[in-house]
Length: 257
Image (tube, rainbow, N blue to C red; front, side, top):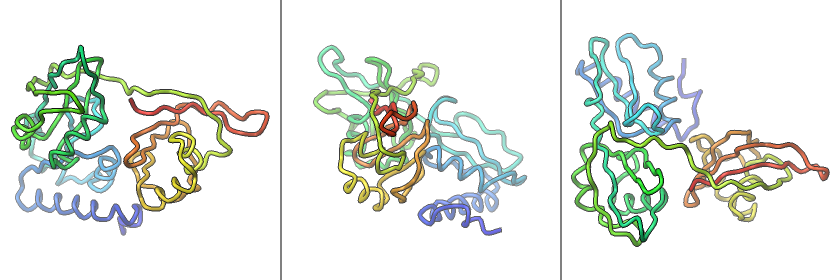
């Protein structure tokens, strides 16, 4: 069976990477920890590894509810432990009485340090409490170099997994109407951009639906879809309420806070 036929062309490189990791485990007969993977990559890895009796895979990102997780591939004899995933959790200390920091500002500050996105996991925000989960190998670098988020001066305090805050996704919700459930139409309404601009973004591979790149402007969106437009953040099609008298779709969408 040609496994590539089940995935998009731009995902083939990741398939090759998974196959290489698998071969390393088989050759060295030892576990292998990956960088953080998004839910799409986790699903791909499950499909590629399948029910292989020689190599197995587990995922962990600091808590069962985290979105981004590191994978551990290991031979059948091995019993994985939390320490194998090599994670560090930091609480961001900042003057919360005077400034606010949000997910996007934190993400931008981390990326400005030259850290690859695959080296850190979920950014957890619950009220004034802000935490980040990172790969242990970059923990010291992040702690020393992350000195500001937006206009806020910050410092990092390492905490235990037991103190991780459990957060629910927070969305700024609003109701709107669209002429169709096409991807370009929905994104145009959410981000208040022209369809021509949105179509260019889609065709350039800058749009993901449920963590998978979609390049078809006419892709049909469904209730519950998570959409992301590079540079503009993440949004979600929360509810499709039905059609109006003018035959437009009334929808409730959320933009990630």
